[in-house]
Image (cartoon, rainbow, N blue to C red; front, side):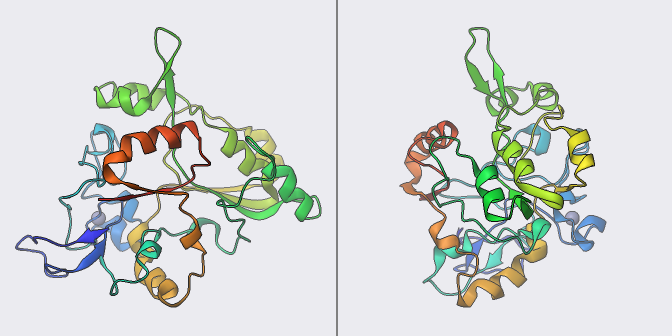
Amino acid sequence: MGTVEVVGPEVTTIHVGDRVVVPFTNSCGHCFMCRHGLQSQCETTSVRQYGTGAAPFGYTKLYGRVPGGQAEYVRVPQAQYGPVVLPPPGRDERWLYLHPADRASRTQIWNPATPSPSSGSGRWDSAIRDLTGGRGADRVRRGGDGGARLPDGEGRHRSVHDTATRGDSCAQQAVGVDRIAALKTAFGSVRCGGTVSLSGVYGGSAVPVNLMRLFDRQVTIRMGQANVRRWTDHLLRLVSRDDVFDVERLASHHLPLEDAPDAYRMFRAKTHDCIKVVLHP
Ligand SMILES: [Zn+2]
């Protein structure tokens, strides 16, 4: 989120001085996928060499290696379509969360900013079952990062981001995710016949779930990068009056941009009850 400083000659939808929020995926707005509401599969920005979807900010060459958005100045590809012009200042933090939760709509929301039922990893699944007569939730949404890691030669772990940045992109495609606790909690929290929505970034081709169990329980899985631009106009109108999704309580930390490396470490280690960090440039 920021202020427009310069616009390219073909960009007529935003102007210098506009306050905008920019979706994390870059999409063109006019290809087949964009016209069908699948902006995260944009055929203009997708990386065909690897068969991956629309290019997001700040990811590896598998997804186009567009420089990250957590910076003082950001060049925005496809700026004729992506940026969403915001209302006057006042509820700025609310606009940071114009990500749709369409893949598991009408879920009774347990605010993730609320402390978990017990310390440590918590037992969300059993707590939710207690609240739902033992059945589980109709719909469960699991966001966040896939966080795959690889052991190095000394037994430590380095992130796949580190590895892929050095060009070893095949590693990212091959390894499984190691942060599967939340995934298991999601599947353990949903009722038979319910829906689990996965909207985080997942790397790795291993299947860390028991498909037979999910089949038996008739669980529907919906997943993929959020088609953010499909929903932003609607969401902007929806949250302009009231914080209907209670997102203003979501951030656990507000930090200056220069503290971003420490913030990432804290988020990765899940210390200080770190759930969501808002960086201020
Ligand atoms: Zn497109």
